[in-house]
Every structure is written in structure tokens, then in C-alpha cells.
Image 1: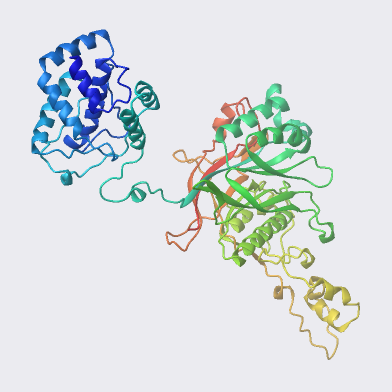
Image 2: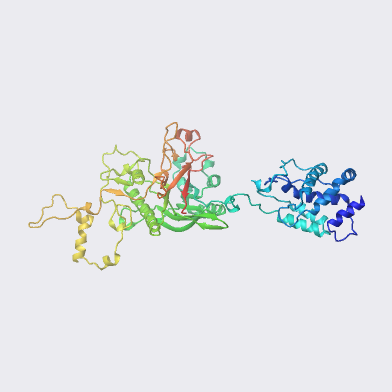
Length: 597
């Protein structure tokens, strides 16, 4: 037996013959080398990804006794093993034999002997006579654990041939290229073609406004009206839905800086805040996740324009231009098209529909300016318009938003928003053209007008050009009906219709996320409720993808958070309550936006 062990060491070119390893260690090395031959002599389909190659420990005393008895019984087999080891090619990543036909028959005997001495996983075997060219599948991945390699190198630290074998195993831990398409085709990961994002719009009820109008919340338990209690519920709700874009209304300034913004920034939001003008303490906030979007532009709008006479209310709006961020390889890059996000809170007064239309026109003009700036660069700009519009569905203001036009001549001002039915009153104000003066700088198409201020400043009273412009001034256009014309003078004044039509238009394609009727029951959806009643006044409008053609860009609505009926809300003791911290419900919608290739 010692002679056989010495012969095996000699053929393995052991550099230090003085150190004799146990016979079991030599057998384990022979079995490991023989196992490496198996992929060529057995079926070409070896261990696949996530499969383990298990070699049981052969170092136990019982195993040594079994090995000794097995060697005594199979001395001829061991001689064949030694002869086979001569034929092993240790240089390639896949080991092959260069033996003659005689050695091929010895390989078959070796396989049988190896099965008797090693416990290996049950794998399908291939006919050894089948040529290698017939293999149609290759390994997806073949790995050795780092621990096995470390143990193997430690055991064979004095053997150059075994060290070489260990190096070969390290090389085999890489990818094995499959037959057919190359690795690039197999591992190809398509680039991003679209991005999904979630939008939340929420009127969170400013605490100052709550305390100023306590009669609206007499039905509520006192604890649900406390700011600390409501703030905790608000932040929990935002964290639960985790919107990528967050539009808030009635955000009290001190609460924003002290309580809301610190937490929102920790959630990964970048925020823009605009307080209402005058003595008002609340405003609007527009936030976005900085990991999803990057800011390309921002406009803070104030609707208080005392020079116009009409716009004397302290409402505000925010318009953002965002660009989505996508990961391509190891880089985070901007990917179009840009997204315009608008947030506003229009005037509440139900009787002043004219002011609401003027405030809305300012928002639409700024959105249109953002869209035009993108068109100059050859980009399509999608739009998401959120807010508390203080107008119920299907009213004139809603019609202007969703259809793009409104014929307003003679409409009662209270009817614009539909919040209250004031038709019982004997007299009420109606709408007539023009709705606002030209000094506002916004046309009846809800776009900014270009005014040459330098030329206007040069004009003096009584100047011929200045007098001609008075023809288009509303005060000069309207002639009293009973005015008697001076003899020899013909009245050719074009009237107001020449510059101010009796209808409004805009070119922003918008559609409401919500259908305003609960499915199944047919009950109207509610977004706000207090002791004086409930209604839908909050909306998320978006620019939809109207057609399936590639040239038509737009947002695809993937889903939205359902609203509730008035009966269900009153069964929960109205709003606010222990679940909903505001007198408004949050609106949540998820969109898909295609990216530019």
C-alpha cells in the first residue's frame, strides 16, 4: 500500500517527498480531479446556477478504514486511476482527456469506481461515446464557494500541481458562454422606456383657519382638532402612500417650517413653499422626491394684483418644471419629456366667480409658458394640475379646465363655481366681456400677451397714436345707447369684441383623474365635508395620452385612490376624525410617462 501511495505522489510531482500525506487526502485529491473530468466524460449539462456541488468529507476514521479496504479490493482499479491521471490536461478551463481508445474504456471503469467511493448529488449522465459537438446546452454559471477554495489551498500548500489546480478552479468561477447567442444578448437589459410616479394632492386645513371657523367643526371631538394630533396623522398618511409628487394646500407657514418640512426632507422630498399675501398665514407647498425628479424651473405666483381692480384677493399658486431621473448603467441621468406640476388654491367666495376665472387664467398662462419653453427645445411637456379649485364638477370653471373653452357672456357669477345656488335672489351680478383689463397681460386664450412697455411709456396724452389705441380700450369702446352722434361724424368704433371675446380658451389638454361618481352605488364622490355640507372641490387634472400612436405623448393613468360618500363619512363622525386629520380627503393617482429614446 505504501508503494502505491509513493507512486501516486511521484506522478503528481510532489516537491517534498519527506512529508507524506494521509492516503485519504491523496484519494480526495484524486477524486476531486476525477470529478473535474466528469463534465467531459458525462453529460455536458453540468451544475446549473443556484445548484450546489457537494463533496462529502472523507477525513473521518471510518472513511479511512473504508478506503483502505476498498483499495485492497480494487488494486487494479487504482492502477487504472493512476494511468488516467497521466492523461489529464490541467491547462484549459474545461478539462479534457487526450487518451487513446484504451483509456476511454478505463474512464468507464473509473466512473464506476468513483461512484463506489464518493457520494455525489444525483445528476443525469450522458453516454460517454456521444461526441462533444452534440452538446446543445452549456452551464449558465458554475461557482465554488470561497470557503471550499480556501480549505483546498490550505491542504495542498506544498503541492505545485495541486496549487495549479486550485488556480484553475478560480478561473472556473466565471461565466460559461452558452451555445448560440453570445453573453451580451443573453444578459441584455433593455433601457428604461417609461417611468411610473404617484401624485398626491391634499388640503391639510390650516390650524389658524380651523380656529377662525370653529362653527364648521362643532361635530368633531376636541382631540382631533389639535394640531399635534392632526400633524402626526398627516405625516403618517403621506408616508403610507409615499407619493413622488406632493401638492399641499392650506399649509400654515410656521407649521411648515417647524413640523412639516423637516420630516418631509428626511423622507427625501425637495419642497417649494409660497405663503399667501397680505395677513394670511397659510399657503401652498409643492414637493417632489429628489431621487425621482430634478427641478428644471419654478414659478411662484401671487394673484393679488391691485392695479387691475378685479384681482384683490390673496391667493397663490406654484408651477414646477420637473425632469424624471432614471438609472442607466451606473449613472443617474435626466430623461425627458419634462413634467409641469402646478398647485393652487383658488378663492373660496362662492359669489365671485369672476375672480376665480381670473386666478385660473393666471395659472393657465404660466403653465402654457412652461409648455412653450419646452417646445422651443423640441420637447413635449406633460402636465399635472392639482389643487383646491373651490368649484364643483361640471360647472363653468370645471368646463373651462376640461374642454378648453367657456362661453361666459351673461352667466351669473355665483354659477361659475356652483358652490351655492343663489338663483332665488332677485338680483345678482353677471359676467360680461372683458373679464379683466388688458393691463393684466393675459389674453382671453389664457396666455401672456407681449406688451412693448418702452413704446407705451413714450406715448403722451393727446398723442395721435395714443388716441388711436383708445379705440381698443374698454372704456372707449362702449358707447352709451342714447348718445346722439355729432353731425357729419360716423361711429366706426369696433367695440369690445375686437380684442375681448365673450368666451375664454386655453390650449392645455387636461382631464380629471376622478369621475366624481362612486362606482356601483352611483353616489357622488366627496373631497371635503364639514357641518355645512360636503362637495367635490379638489382635483388632479393631467394631460392624457389620447391615442396609441408613438408621436402622441401624454400621461397614462394607472390608478387612483378611491374617495368616499357623504353617508360613509358621516358614519365616521364627519371630518376631521380619528382617521382623516383634515376636512378634506387626500387625492392620490399613479401615472406612467413614456421616456424619450
